[in-house]
Image (cartoon, rainbow, N blue to C red; front, side):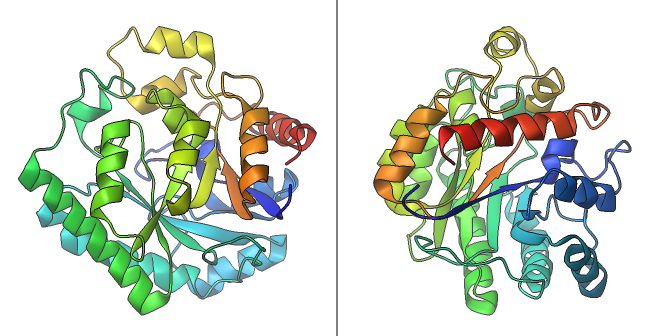
Length: 309
């Protein structure tokens, strides 16, 4: 690479997506295994998974030589009634991540980590239409504007109070998923307020070409997620009426290099454009399917290293 990149991970690799799930591993187990897998950094995970206790989390990270590269808002961004909840999460997450041990800065980064990754979630009708642009309902004018206003409020609070860059993450099963919605949100949220976190797996799952999409929105891309998709499982779940994370429980996300996404082409593109900073690898799963986590992470890291990352 022409600019330095640090590969990090996220709690979703351990099945941590819904904090109410009774099968989640203890957060310190995730830190232990992230360290054992050779990562120096990871994301905070969904709100409420890691304790919002500065001293406790700082000590746990320092003990393992880890850094938090991003916090996450993963919630209903559409409802105006959810605004206070979203801003409370923003306040508490940013207050924590900005006081934790700092990730190193890389040449080529537009904005310093940690970031605040912002994703819409919590709408059954869209969850069941994940990956199906033709059957997914779109938000009408007033509802879309309500979501835009919520994102603007989150991003402004993160920027103005904490100096944290908000990055909007299109996510399968949310109201920012498909190409038309990505274009619309980029047009409606100014670049000085928020950037993008583009995820190769979510782009592919939703019918977008990862390299073409990265190229189109390159001037807004501040942070990147890597995943891979098992073609056979993907074809199966696309024939079902299934929620996104139920598809993940069936194994639609696989170790990087074993799926359909062209990572040599992504490496060439990122080298061409000189991306520097953080890339977080993810592989959503059922938290009860924990036996292969370290093997899967090792396989992903090995493949990416062979590919030049």
